Structures are given as C-alpha cells and as structure tokens.
Length: 324
Image 1: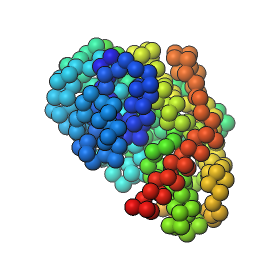
Image 2: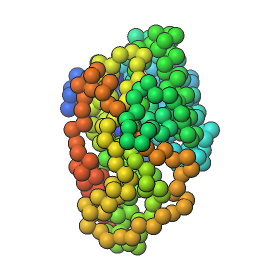
Image 3: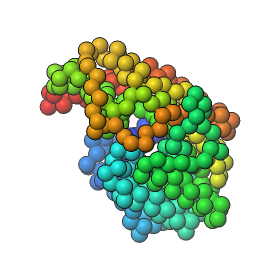
Image 4: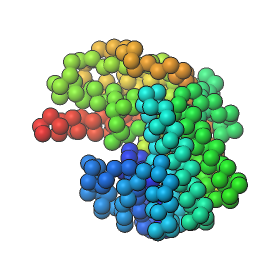
C-alpha cells in the first residue's frame, strides 16, 4: 500500500512510522512543515520513508502538487497545531492549519486520488466536557470550548461533508489525550516529566509549576494510539467517527503524584496562574466500544508503563542536553 502521512515528523508521526515498519507492506511517503534537515529525527525519517516533502498544508497549490505527483492508496492526516494553550495565543493560525489545511488535503484528494482511503485524526476536545463519571460516545454533541477545539470541530465537519457529498472514503477519529516518549513539554504530563528531569539533573529548583490539577482526563499511550490509526485506515467504515480512547479517567493530580514517585525526586507543587486555562473541561473520558467493535483494538500499555517511559525519555534527553 502506498501510504501518505502528513505531519510525519511530529510526535505521533514518528511512532506511527515505527509501527508501520513492524507491520510491513507499506510504501510510506511523508510531509511536514519544516525541511528534513531541521528535524532531530532526520536520520530515522530518511530510513523509514520512500520520500519526504517539506509542505505547508495551508498552501492549497503545494498540497495539490504533492498528492498529484504520486497518487496515494491511503493517507493519514496527522498535521495539526495541537496545543490548546497555543491556540489561545494564535487562534487564526490554529484555524488555518487545522481546518483549512484539512480542507486543502481533502479537496486535493477529491481531484487527484478520489479512491484513496483517508484517516483524519481529530481531537476529543470537540466534545467540550462529558458527564462526571461517564464516558463520551461518538453521538454526543460537539461543544468546543477553545480555539483549538473549535478548529478541530470544523475539521471534523469538513471531513464528514467530503465523505457524504463527494464520496471520499474518509474516516475520522476523535482522539483523547495521549502521551509517551517524545512528546513536547508544552503538554501537561510531558511538561511535568521535563520539570522533574531538570530538577533531577540539578538544572532547576525543586518546584513543579502546574495549572489546574483537579480535572479528570484519560491518558492513552501514543504507541497504542498509532496502532488504532493503522487499524482504522484498513478497517474503519468510511464516513464514520471513532473515539480513540482507553475509557479510564484519572485525576491529573494523581498522575503528577505518580510521576513524582517514578522520578524519586523531591519537589514542591506550585500553582502557576499562567498555566490555568479558562473553560477547561472538568471531565473528559471516552467510550472506546465503537473502535473495538470495528477493529478489535484495545490498549496494551498501562498508565504506569506510559508514565515510566515518559519520564525515562525526559530524563535521558535532559541529561544529554546538560552534557552538550
């Protein structure tokens, strides 16, 4: 299968390439916004990709050219501005990348490769908040609460329209929070792990700066998430949306406590008002039953394994930086 991947150099992209290499049978072509040489994982990308294209998905002409050159059998659309915090600072740019970028990809496929199966990876943030103690299903209304969530809701609607109106075989995900090795410190758990690693290395005072810890989230492992993507591109039903979720919620405070235990670092937790987001959803946990029924997927890694791997990765990176 000739598989194209947008956002291939990002957090999920690298893990997806690793998983596809294990599966075998894919001719993978990737695109991302920066030149290949700018990525710290450039050697791995060269080894795993048939081709790489520097691509701005907000440039419709450039997207057309890439997809027309070697028509894909399938495409997994990962490219996104993925930070809710960044969207508050740059709402217009976030919408351009997430909504208009998706529109450009789908419209180019409509003209150049209309039979290609497409997986548009979305976000559970489109739901807003779910009922306390409950799990959100795919038939829940979309109630985005920040510019990032709004842009992903627009993406979801655009993808559904292109499936229903133009008969593109588009599958959508509403992916719940996930983490793991390689995630940027801009995100909550990866940021906690990075702070703990810096304290461990003697590069920061023994304080963990946090936002609101009283929210309930589920945190899947990125390596399980990309397994779901690979299954859905083959088995998902065109036009449908699927939660990629574990179904298990955790208080963010409890996950921080577990990370501190794993790190064996003594630190004081300090609430930083600049890290507290307005309109933060109190409870966001998904129902994975539809995904499981369609593909047989279930998460393979425990939250403890994910947190341990996340901290180990952060510690190794910080120690390497300190020696450089």
